[in-house]
Image 1 (cartoon, rainbow, N blue to C red):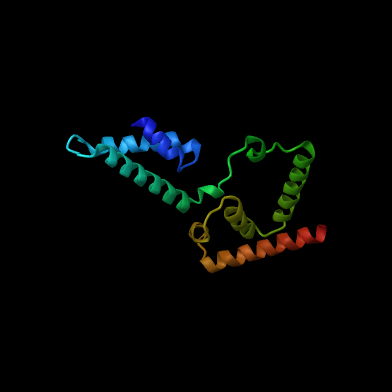
Image 2: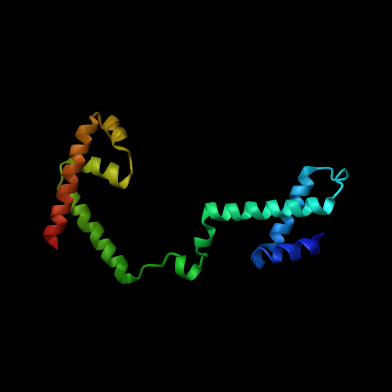
Length: 154
């Protein structure tokens, strides 16, 4: 049956999928169990093949697989920053750290817990014994200060 199925799928599916589709047909037949009682085994095989093909197409449509882009290590791999990029990043980090040190300790702590540690505002409030509203106000104060100081330095 393999050659017949291969030709059948070759007319209906991309060539790189034919072997997988044939294999899927065989898997479904094996999972079904006994096929001895089937009067028209060949018709059953091709009906199964039709179902496999429909399922594959349905899956492709749902997943929008025709819009996927193949992974290309050259294009998608993270690039290693150069010396100049590292220096710029280091200077930006130092500047940000100096500006954050200008903040009151509580505002600075809340800003770091939220932006650096990624903690939720409610958890920060519980840890520090503050209301959510108070934590939000400290975050606003810290963010405004940071943005205004960065803008002034530009």
